[in-house]
Image (cartoon, rainbow, N blue to C red; front, top):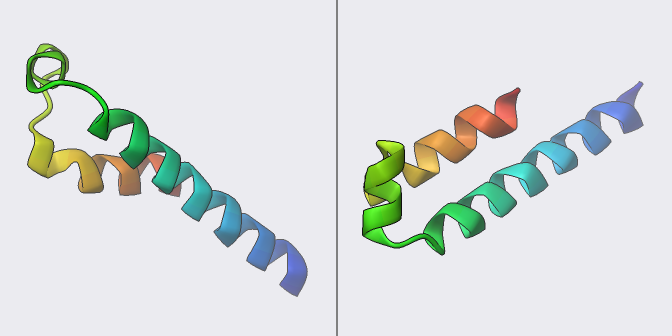
Length: 51
């Protein structure tokens, strides 16, 4: 159970980092098309990783 919890946290962190990386690679125009501003990338990634 304890190990499963650690694995879940690591997976969540990896999802967060991947999401930040992918969104950060988009141009401001592409982010605008998605309705995202660059300053919101961290919050969006956290929400996605928590799922």
